Length: 259
Ligand code: PGA
Image (tube, rainbow, N blue to C red; front, side, top):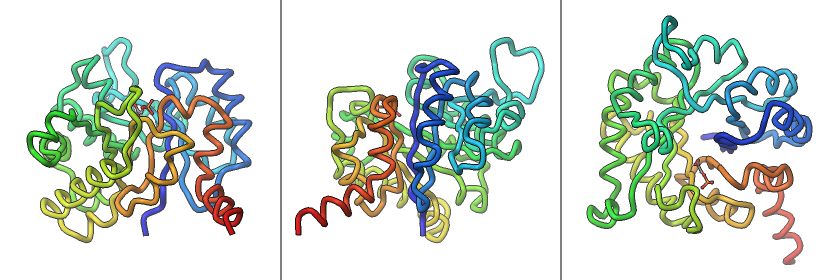
């Protein structure tokens, strides 16, 4: 049984104190049957971890260096992220690929380094609409995964988290389409079953990202191959975030009201 995973990707938003206040406001309201995480700017990780205390909030890094240590001015090592309290690291987000020219090869190095450092990678994949339309399925994502997962064993893969983010839906006005989310996540799972095996593919959590908000999260999470959501803009507001992480209770409430 794959545990749902809802992640706030704050990108370059919120300062240290705002981040701590946010954690304070949500830490006692986390659902028990799901995993919840926040990916803040790296300077906020340590204080957020302290603020989160014994709650099961996961503190997530947005990026890391593949190098262990040394003369890499401006970079942050995986060991330091672990020491600061990060349990997961996002790698290969489309903004890293587009704005900072990160290649699949570089992301692969980071994935292997993260596994060595004992921090779980959240591997982001993306796809342009036109590529999907031409191919009828998500070939570009398959190519990303083939390189990015090079050298990852079946045993390591089952704990890795993968996100599928159609690039037209990320940070855009397009509303997320639950059927596209399901099709992308299903195709990724199928490709993992083909290149590894069905058992492992069945254990990997695959998240959807791109314009998820309180209005569409229930429908997206109801899809069988979507195991979670990576949420940007809508996660910056405490009330919106609480509404989204408690989407199951909201659904039950609405069902009860409809009777
Ligand atoms: P968005 O961003 O929810 O603002 O579309 C998602 C992401 O970049 O992970």
